Image: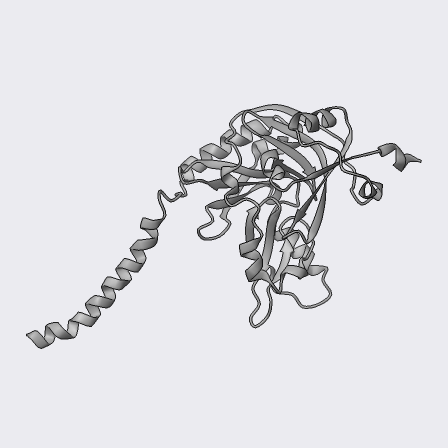
Length: 300
C-alpha cells in the first residue's frame, strides 16, 4: 500500500503546481473587467443615441453593430457600426477595474478603424507578396498607436496603421522593444472622463496638412487651453495639430475639423480617412503643437 501511495505523490505535486499556477493570476488581478453583453449593449445604445444628434451620424440610428475584442487581457473592444453589410463607422471602448466602460474614440465613414475591407484594399495595392489579411491582428494602445500586426515566421512582423494605408517599416525590426517603450499614458482609459450626455456640436474647416506646407515653417501657436481651441473652431479658423507618435519617429499632422462637447469630456474631430473623434485630455498627453493655417494663401 505504501508503494502505491508513493507512486502517486509526484503526480499529486504536479497537479497542485498546475492549480496554483492557474489560480495566481486571478488573485493578482483585482476585480478584473468582465465582458457583459447586456451591459455593453445598453452603453452603446446610450452613446449612439447621443452621437446621432450630429447629422453626419444619422445613418447610425438604424444600423447594426459588431463587437470584437482587441486582444486577450486588453479589456478593449472595437465596435464596427454596419449598414447593409458595410462599415459606416466605429467606436473603441475600454473597461476599467470597476467594470465601467470608457469611450476611447469614435468615428464615421467607410474606412473604419481596423476595417478588414480597408486592410484588404491596402494589401492588394502592394506589388510584392504579403501575408493574407486574416493573419493581421489589431494592436491598440490609444488613438495614436493603433496598428495591424502580422507575425511572420523567421522574420520581422509586417505592420500597418489601423486606420490609414501607411506601413511602419521602421518599427518592424524592433517590434518587441517598441511594444514596451512606446506608451505616453500607462492606462489611457483612466485619463478619459466618463461621458453620458452630448451637449454641443461644432463644425470647423478641413484642410489637407500636405496641401499647403507653409505651416511647417512657422512657429506653433500657444493653444494649450481647450477654450482657445474651441474658439478657433467656432471662428472657422483652419486649425492643424502635430504630435509625435511611434516613439517620436513619426510626426503626425492632423486637421481639426470640429468637436463634440460631452458632459465630462471634449472630443476633437480630426479628419483621417473619415472623421475621428479623439478625447482632448488624451491628445494633450502627447504635447501637441497647434498651427493656424492661412487658407487665403491657397486661393492665390
